[in-house]
Image (cartoon, rainbow, N blue to C red):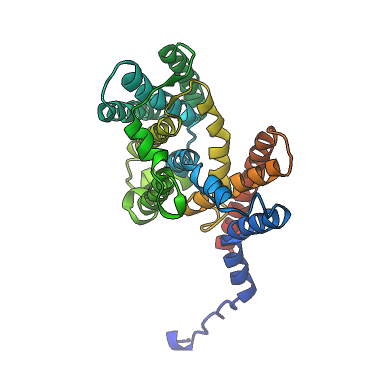
Length: 338
């Protein structure tokens, strides 16, 4: 007989430094790509792209898209889709504009009303998905269409202007560090807050657990239904924040332009999932993706590309990003098995 001390220990797996180097390279590949885009367009367009004014344009004009994309991280992390986010943005911005500019309601109550609208939309979406067991794609696609009709009704199919100058000043009027409008710093704050919530709190970890395996999460005792409803509610709330920023940047609201944010927001979320924490939707990756995509669009337009290049660029980026994120997840699964 052999004793426990005589048992030969299994050989330890050899360390693969090349694989570790690839993992680190993969984490920062999108950031490197953004730097390459900036350097490339700066060399090609030194007098237009590589200027302080263009830097302020690129960084200071994407807060609405960034905040909207950050809100989408909650349902995406939980394994759901929210196609109504851009419509929620439109309804919220129109709520502020109609209440404040048309009905004379003070700006603070108007903003609170817009936030309540966003929460209710997210809550209703979550209830239909969880309680009535309807696919989130169908529910949010339907609610997005309903919301567009509500926006057209609220605005009488026309733009509403004249929002309180205090909101405009708080969004684009005041210039902070490097001459950036305040909305840029709102985007930074939103990124930091959502980074903390999704990575350092129990709620974030539970949402990730639900997204990776709903049945396993239920067997582990998590209230999966409440977490999924909460994810939609958070998405609606943050989309309404984006709508308020949008109303401030426009000085009013437009009934149709909000939909243009949906595709870029999803493209940023999926492209961001290939960076920093590959295979996982994350706030920092989304932040980098938003500005990477917009830098590419601005550079191409400065080179003489037509306006439709924006749709081509964002649409192509979404397809590539989804393919890359799926490939990374499959590779991570194979690595865990091996």
